Image (cartoon, rainbow, N blue to C red; front, side):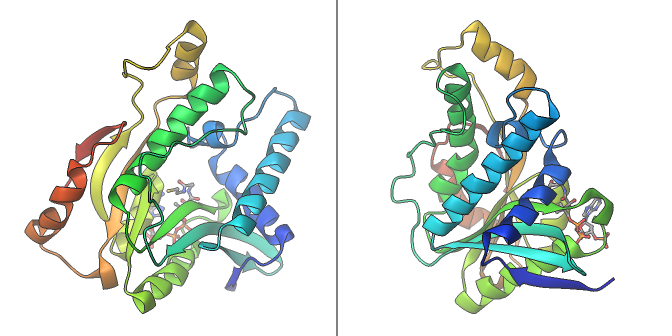
Length: 255
Ligand SMILES: CC(C)(COP(=O)(O)OP(=O)(O)OC[C@H]1O[C@@H](n2cnc3c(N)ncnc32)[C@H](O)[C@@H]1OP(=O)(O)O)[C@@H](O)C(=O)NCCC(=O)NCCS
């Protein structure tokens, strides 16, 4: 089957990617239920959640000049997609800025989701305050995986990175990591959301969310400029300073 790579310029195209995202992640990746929550158990509740995520991601895309949504079509059908954010300067002037998960209703749920989201975004903010390209929400329809579609989405971004001579960064799931390492991304740290902080009000409702929504864990991965092959000592030298910046999540250094 022929696969063609395209860039989103209208909402219906991003809507198609979001349908793929739900098929690839819902019930599979634990972080999905935090970033794209469903309130209720009926089919209409899921539809409502999908519609909300389509609107939210489109609004975010329109407001963000660094955002590029890329997708792959097989015939007329959208079978995969991801977001590349390309930054030519420091996108995180305040690395401590927190995420407010307004897509959750006010209360414990929102506070919990805000804490998770802030921890998940914390490393990128702390460690990548420089020009770079970041990958988010990489997804391929389950029945279309292992056919090179993820690789096509990667190549689009690698070309842009190498033309601009910038680094790359991604928070990788277990399967994402298998894809990214084929494209010169190196493991920097193993990260796990960690609620063991004195300032958190861990009520019974909060602990229940911990039991049902965690663990959320991933590998922070980095690609040097031009995918340069570095010796472990060279990579360690670059990361020694960056890894000193404290982040709230549990981090095990892999460099
Ligand atoms: C990660 C994902 C996007 C990969 O997409 P894909 O289209 O299957 O990727 P490709 O076919 O281009 O895979 C390229 C290579 O990655 C590696 N790879 C991908 N999935 C793998 C798996 N399940 N097991 C082992 N290796 C895998 C292989 O090296 C593969 O090459 P090969 O098939 O020739 O061995 C897809 O598995 C997916 O949507 N997963 C669920 C969502 C997710 O975890 N997204 C990543 C968020 S960080």
